[in-house]
Structures are given as C-alpha cells and as structure tokens.
Image (cartoon, rainbow, N blue to C red; front, side):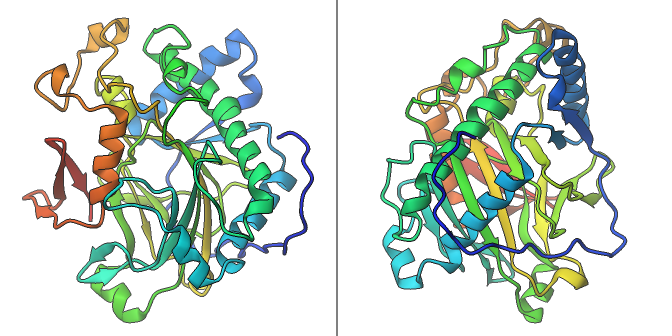
Length: 364
C-alpha cells in the first residue's frame, strides 16, 4: 500500500494460535510471486482450477502486503469496535433489511442463528468508495488507510485472481476484470468483524455453530488469515474441516456470482464459523475481509463463449437467462433475507430460502 500518515492507535495483540489437535483442510497455496510471468500464471491457473473443483478454498502468499501493514490493519479493526461507543455505533447502522446493504454496522443479536439464539458478532463495513457514507469519529482519521487497503485488495489481489479465473475458462484475461471496475457503482467492500464468546446455553442450542454453513454473495472473498480457529469448510467427503492459520496469508473463496458467471464451473465455497477450541474460547475473534462483487448493473449470466463451458456444459440456476439477476438484485436479495427469514428444512438436512426465485441453501 502507498505510504500514508498513520495516526497513533492502540496496538491490537492477537490471541495465541491454538495448541489443540484439530482436523485441518488440506488447501492449495498459490504463490503470487509467480504472477508476473506467463509460466507462473499458467501454473497458478491450474492450481486455482483444481482448488475450485475440490473444496473451493485456497491460500495466497507473497501477495505484496507486509506483515507490519497486516498488523496495522488489525489495529484499525479494533478501533472500529473498542474505540467507538455503542450509542455512536447506532448512528451508523447499515440498512440491511430494507436497503439490502451492509454498509455501516451490523449490531450484535441482529441475526437468528438457530434454536432461537441470536448472533454474537458485529461488523463494520466500508464500501470501496469510502465517501459513500459518513464514518464514526474514531474511524475518520483512519479512512485513508482503509481506502488504500481496499484498493490493494481490489487492484493487486482481486484483479490478478480474476485473470486466473478467466484463463481457467479459456476466456480473454480481462473478461471478469472488466466487470469489477473500482470506480463503478457497486458493493465491493472491506469488512471489519468481531465475534464475541457466547454462553454455554447458547452453544448447546446451536450445536456450537456461530454462523451456519453458507455460500458468499459475490464473486471472490479475500479473508486475511487470523489465529482463532473457527472457520470450517465443507469438504467433498461431507466433513467439516478447519482452515489453518498461516501468518500474513490470504484465505480465498468464490461465491454465488462467480458460479453464475461461470455456468456452474466454479462452485461457490460452503463454509461456516463454529465455537473456537477450548484454549481460545475466552478471546474475541477479529476478522478482516474484502468482499468483491461485480458492478451493480452486471447481469449474472454464464460466459457461453468459453471453450471450457462448451466442452463441459453449462449449469444455470434459472430456466433462462432473461430470469438471471443483476449483481445489485442478487446482493440486495441475499443481504435483506440472510438470518432474517424463516428457513425451510429439506430432506437432506439442509435449510433453504428463496431469493429472486433461486433457492439458497444453508448448511447446519
């Protein structure tokens, strides 16, 4: 990120890594040091394609942001929660249910998890256009750094990844890049998130699940790895496995919009958040995420010109492309209903809601 004047803020000390023997997912590690050469991009394309055809999560290392910059961003996250009074946060609540937008704060106990238990996490979301909304007083001096961080994620991580996704479908490299204009109207955003410990009663009622298994709304999700072990991915064998923490690594997955655009070739990753292991249960869990979505006006239809899709076939979640949603319609529909509507239980054990006539599954 470019050099900026950095206001003094308290330093956040992350929790220690768990010592418990957990069952971790074996995830591919993409080395972005190879992204600058044609040979490297070919190798990374194959890695990405294999990862997306198995479990959908992968790591990125050597992405260009230093550990010191990473640490600084977690200092900033902590300010958004511990540095802003509760009464002030209420002035910046996101218009989730009616506006279908996460921009601003989502307060604790807003979503229904299971068994009548509400969530115990909050998040503060900043659009890639940081001028879209006003920010809390303590956060305002930090906005230039948050904007630089958003640009780094969008231009230096997302764009190279989107080129790899396109190459995997044998499409022109900028096919997906051209749908994710940084200056266009859209909802790509930085999410600062904090999970709080829950009561033993709530853990029992929810079977230790903090956030049900789900897929993400957009195209690509970029999670900055943190030490509290709670994120799990649903593996092809039907088992949930933990995502291991790697210092200064990115944990990346694709979402619904990428599935739509790729005609089902790139499956959205099913993941959830559960109670941390015993030696980490008394810590808060800070997360830093960049959620990428296409420009709002992009219609989420398959790239039928792809030679790969012509060979392997196209899977649509609707009967014809005229019924396909735009990115704006899909993210508003998902956002305004997630955790806020009654789910229909299915025979396979999943739960389901409908968005724009398309079934959205939740995994318990």
